[in-house]
Image 1: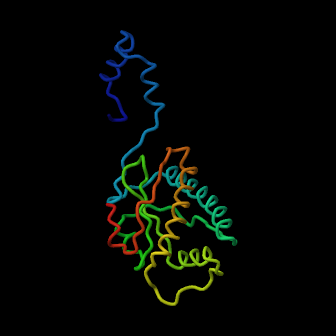
Image 2 (image 1 turned 45 degrees about the horizontal axis):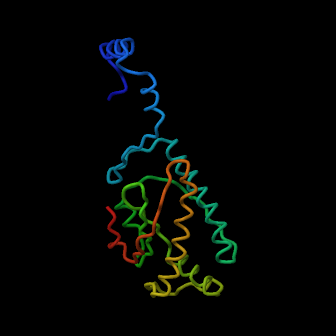
Length: 192
């Protein structure tokens, strides 16, 4: 339905209201529901500034929760900040991922599809080292894949990360996110 009504449409609506065919209460009830639009990330349109601001607020709240969780869990000072919120196509994101990568594939139920949580290898190995009692500052001299033990430890951390997503999104939608898989090769993260 277009935003502008013709004079004939206005006259028809007024006559339907006066005859009782259309109830005003039903019309106002429909507008109070939350509206969800599909978004095609393969051809990104411009987000409205208020939509980007909403996403930024959601991620700022998530970063605050993540700060508190990681500081306690890893027993060290952690600072997580939102740098920017920008839309871009998946192929640009995919090309920017380092290999080997650490990608958490998350089912974002009740919304369709999945999201990707990209964790830097250096950060992932520092978290694993802290969980195992180390200083977390050793760093790796060469890039390598995760061992099964490291993958399990990282899975536990990512599950806790993802559960923290529920609260910031609560005003928009009641999420039930679930970590489906951890991929180390960006080519196998086929969510599109």
